[in-house]
Length: 540
Image (cartoon, rainbow, N blue to C red; front, side, top):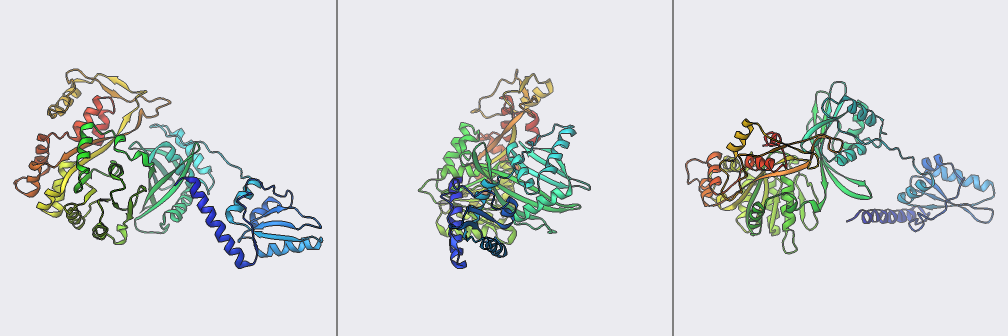
């Protein structure tokens, strides 16, 4: 639903409740919707300060024959209405009061007395050792009005493309850092009173307590308007008590349904064919593994979006819901409140879904329930914490033991990482030294035959170049993905037919089936000039 429709629905509801309230109070109701932009308000009747404090607007001037007309709200003091009536009656004139909605009042008062809009400088990210920029941003944040400081911080983080805002209490200041393209950057140092305002905004909007002595989780949404368009920003809020106060981390999810598309993840044609083949079947289990912040949720949502057709019923169980997608039934699961994914999964399976997405497999009960669901005609998608796809099997076996049903249920494991993408406009090619050449040759020596092998005798690598248009030399992030399709040789390990079931042996069998590892994918991306070896080594 677009912003205009949302605003219209809110205003319609406001007017309806105001009309009902007017009938109860015995006062005339006046619908201002048709004249919000056109009504010429009477000038010089009441001063602007009184109009604000008493929530009243002069609708039309009167005289000895015609009454003066005022719009009042449910917040207008009755004593003020009585006093105003007395004053006009003493002058031999009459007054009529009309109850208007809060939304109508805001439109009229803002037209009569437009608020002064203060424009603050945009936040800039400092380079390493650049204390001057941090000082300037700190001064800006400390000068932003209390009502706007939280919204300003979130808006700027969204504008910079940050994925997280870290607000950290230190002995004599509050440090603000933002994670941009996977790397944390210092932004500002705030005074304690600024942080109290931010924490207060978090408490009211994300439903957390400012006095909690235990870690808390919350969720909120914020509409961001920029360059004439509006998008919905989801924020996951995590707080934890520290020595000097509650530290907070805000994870930003910029909801753009069109971005949840497998074609936009940069997956190779071969990988895409494997995914399409697996998810096109009506049953089985797909796991996406990797550390926090590796893009697992985005990949799962993109797969869900690809499956989102009118002939499929799709359910998700999430803690919390990160993106709202039309046409899908999304169910929040508050695991901190005692609920478990397993309990909810057993319940929703009675709704006969075709596809179920589980936020995360965290315990043996959820794992067994998900496996059972995947062999009874459902496609089950979930995330799982493991370092790579082969390690996911050994971790799952540690969780549920040798389980022959799991071997027939699991169809695909995808391990992934996010690396910073070089800015094509500024990146610079260079010749690697001999040690780097030998390392690259060693990493890629066993590439599967179906993968086109680059010339490893003479190749170039690329590095970032910092400039005015590219402050870090990188622009956005890209996914590096390892896909392990479960074939008969892999099933043997999961069933327990083989003696050794540790990750290295499973990976060796998968490589014989043509799997390309995360490290190989990362180095190949570096050779194509999409990222750097430093990024690959940092992340993988």
